[in-house]
Length: 264
Image (cartoon, rainbow, N blue to C red):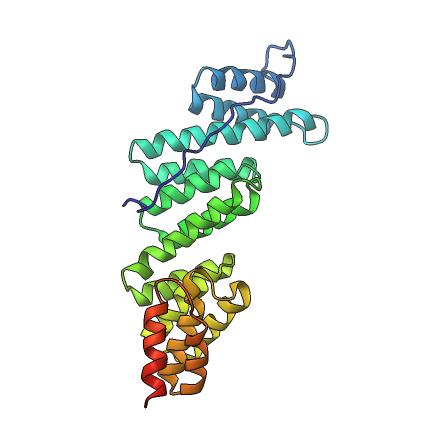
């Protein structure tokens, strides 16, 4: 299943965090395993690299080998990302998600594993999981990437809203709001609740959207509020809301509604 919106290429800078001098011992040490992992990562042997970093972490003493632990976790997350990418390309989505989860466990601050996990979950048609993963990516990504990640999550809700899949919109919209915030998602929910005759919930969402973003794009939040008040039979409140829709694709319909109700 494709996302239905343009996905941005995930650029992973393979900045290896430095190597640790190998310790000359017959038995592999955390340092030697780490260095072998770096070599495998440079050689694009991602599965081998991930395995070596995991071995290094298993052998490392959390106190005595703090630097090695930190480096192995950070580069292990990069290796896991590439393993997940390759598994996803091969159509092995469950395996792909498992790799991304492993990378997240190794370094929770590497946002690429969250965003890539979201893509894999979306292909598995686990839209709720994809929304959560995108929102988590927005929380750990740098400021220039965070809005894009949150918008990707919003668009997954919009896909259902645009198809008038009201129950699905309500489900996904609430999952989004349990993990993040968006005036647009509140607007989708307001109209979905209104379409399913859940008017109190619809008004609550419209009011919250207005609180967050006033009218929003094309004064859509005021238009939704007007529709809901109209459905409730509150003509004066509906007219007041519709009059606030002064521009955009809803303005003509809002003016028509005002004239219609004023002449009743």
